Image (cartoon, rainbow, N blue to C red; front, side, top):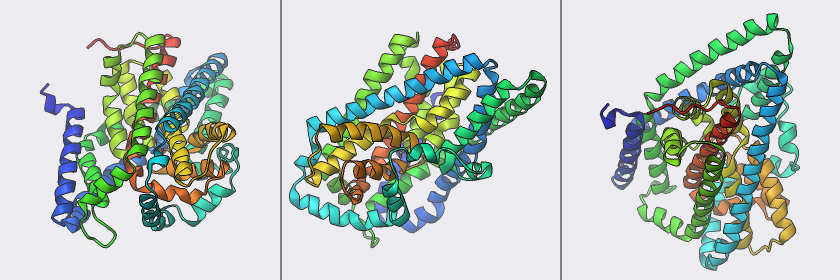
Amino acid sequence: MKWYRKLHWQIIIGMVLGLIYGIVAAKFQWIGFAKNWVVPFGDIFMNLLKLIAVPLVLTSLVAGVASLSDFKKLSRMGGKTIGLYITTTAIAVTIGLLVVNTINPGNRLPAETKDNLTKQFQANANAKAKGETVESAKARGPLQPLVDMVPDNFFGSASSNRNMLQLVFVALLIGIALVQVNSEHRQPVLTLFEGLQAVVIKLVNMIMLMAPIGVFALIAKTITTLAVGEEGQTDLAQIGAILGALGYYCIAVIIGLLLHICVVYLGLLKLWTPLKIVQFFKAVGPAQLLAFSTSSSGATLPVTMRQCREKLGTSRETTSFVVPLGATINMDGTALYQAVAAVFIAQASGIPLDMGAQVTIVLTAVLASIGTAAVPGAGIIMLVIILEAVGVPGEGIALILGVDRILDMLRTTTNVTGDAAVCAVIAHSEKQLHPPNE
Ligand code: ASP
């Protein structure tokens, strides 16, 4: 097959063209055209991906859990998976704290820039994370994510992609109950869920054919939004200036994410799977690219599952259980970013954080990342909880909102990589990893 016929190359081409188009559109003020004729294709693509998120999580988790026909196997695999997810997240936060305390990005910010940025982003922050979100996040205790996880109505939990954690909870409960009823009752229900799962997976493949165009439109949208100011004036230098001022902060997040991927994931893969590193990245590449361009591990979930099953060779059973659960609760990139961002904002606002505060950051970031919805920008809203826990005003997020989209792309890519790495480890430990020979 010619290289350009491969989907991941088409996605890369879509991304590069989207970048070029975005800059040109901003420069020549083609914003109206981009908005009316390009951006909608990105929205359609996102809608399609989101559309299948709920059926996918529900069918795969129920089928995944229930097909682990014996309860002992389920608790063993569940215990291992959740244990590994939480451990990697705690390590991610620790790496984030080490990096940010070494680079000290907030202390390098000139006072003048700091003031300007705070003023400039204040309006943005108020608009984006205003009222209810910030207020309700403030009123939450650290265990609130656990309470939020238990829905009081099934349809409520399935009615919004933001309630994904609740849906995971319901799906796990149904799956666990199914394992325990006698096989006469279990079998037809299980067959139904497996059939539905096959249909949803087919849908994923169909939707993915649109990915190159969708990704083109999404990147073009991001670039034009960044490059065109509130009053419609083109200010390409703005991107450079903001990135320059917040450069050290971004570098800290990026170094942290890279360290986490190289040390933790590659370490896990080397120690506990027979997979070669190149083979792993080749397999999860399309999922990483999609995570990068959509900033949503929820929207990427179908592709992550497909790549794990077809290219890494993890069994259907393991993949259906480990990956959807991971897309919802395992957000190492988000937790790491939240730790760096919290310290950066504290430093920039001149609030010292002692050892106790840093430990609080570890605990709250692990919990907050579990409760973070797998949608773009969710991480920064949950960041308010962490800031409040260490006595930093939640409004401090205003400072970093401008660069959040770019970091969201990177942390989502890390989140998705983590789900795939853990899936490979669990599959191998269950003797369910059979990499295809290419
Ligand atoms: N966008 C991230 C994800 O979907 C969540 C976040 O905002 O950190 O994985």
